[in-house]
Image 1 (spheres, rainbow, N blue to C red):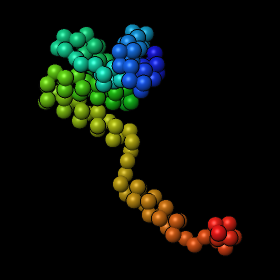
Image 2: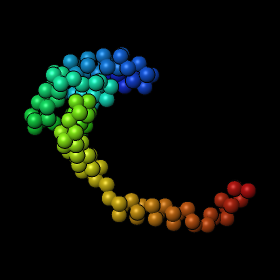
Image 3: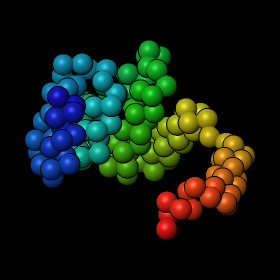
Image 4: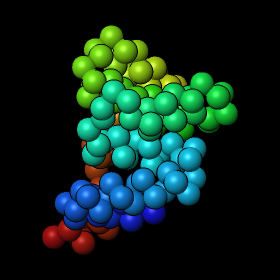
Amino acid sequence: MNNLGISYEILGLEVEALNHYEEAINVKPDFAEAHFNLSRLKKYKKNDIQISKMKSLLSSGNLNQSDQIFINFALAKVNDDLDNQDVLFKFLNKGNRLRKEQLNYSINDYQIKHSLIKKIFRLDLPSINKELVR
């Protein structure tokens, strides 16, 4: 259902996408990615039941890191819709921090890899390859 929702969203069929994301959540209430996908299309109102479901999921302590990221970003979107800027940034910061941990990105590692690639492509081609290039 979630994948069908993604497909419908790509095709620009938002109503169908919303329906499939909601169905995915009905089948599997802790499906964090479906909550996130739904949040990108849905405009939340204050008493929306999905908000309490996502908060409950997050506070349960049963989510893996990826699911925590999805739910934090979804709740950031909720609070953006509700114009709760302070709470929005709380969830956004938490989601970004978790995502950064997950990526384990290092600018130093990137610079080393980039430098090696530049060195490789600066090397002269062997004479046999020069013949093929002509």
